[in-house]
Image (cartoon, rainbow, N blue to C red; front, side, top):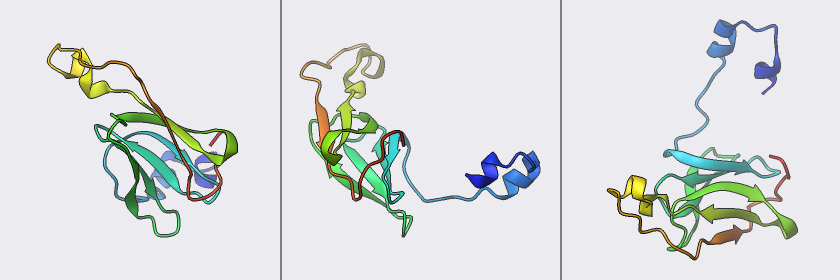
Length: 120
């Protein structure tokens, strides 16, 4: 982040400093905890995954059969992280014009590996 904020670097210099952080599938939302672990909602899946800051390894973190395409992760009260189930694969646009999404629309909460940070 220091490199991104450094206005003295040219585009070429900045580009040379870019590195791959970790392998991961396509994700939707993400959040980060106080220990810099990344939480990712995985497109088309029923899971929130995590990339451990120490090892930069990706793994599934929490799963629920009703967590149909979670999107967005936010920190909330009492140290929990929250995500909603968007049910996108059941919507008409992604289901050959046949809307099968329906209530209830769940909100899920889980404890992160470390304390969450509001605004991160």
